Image 1 (cartoon, helix red, strand yellow):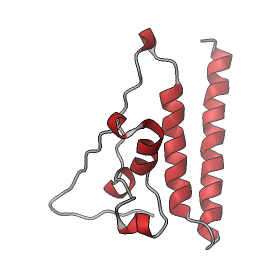
Image 2: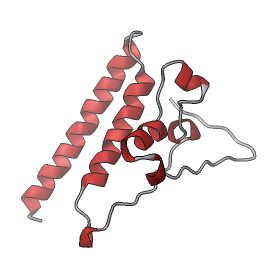
Image 3: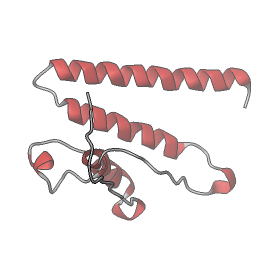
Length: 116
């Protein structure tokens, strides 16, 4: 890959990140939008772009995503889903099929999580 093409792709990734952040920020300020859905939708879109990249020897992509349980879980059967929210796990399963996704949850015995 030529250096110029690589920098162009990096620039595209950066712009997509900024656009996603702006959409999320606007959703936070607009009570008619779900900032949660915008955020998890952006995460799913990023994973789709990663999965679409050409792989050596034609092998399918395999990835591990480390995220909070509330994001990687499937929101459909939960209170989150009943309130109209979606999750990264739900979006990835609906786009790639249940058999293509494995979810692993993590927990700790003590401590706290700070998320802004």
